[in-house]
Amino acid sequence: MKVILNKDVKDLGKRGQVVEVSEGYARNFLLPRGLVSIATEGAARGLEQEKTAQLRKKEREQKEAQSLVSRLNAATVKITAKAGEHGRLFGAVTAHDIANQLANQGLQVDKRRLEVPSPIKVAGTYKVTVRVHPETTATLTVHVVPE
Image (cartoon, rainbow, N blue to C red; front, top):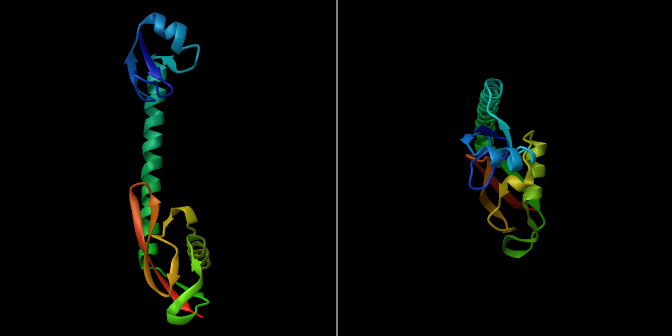
């Protein structure tokens, strides 16, 4: 019996695949749990439409990510912080501080997407990586200036 997987099933396949299984396995285990649907022409057409919609959505997200990457690569963030001798900061500049400064510049970036190598504790210039999309990253320049 041919079925379309509604969810990932261990040792059988990934969501959206059409697989051949025995009738007993399908009727007694897979169908009652909602893991599969019977492969009919209508179900196959629906699956194809869903795949094309997901592909279009992924392409649109990729284009948006590319535009954000170009703006982030061109942007520089200047953060002023209280500092003592030799430019050592009293606190630390974190991803939260950088995200707030980017928001002030009109670039909305979630602080969890910023990859700060370690807390910034000395005044200077740093490169911070931003994960914009799973396949796309940008590099941001951060200037930490003592007050």
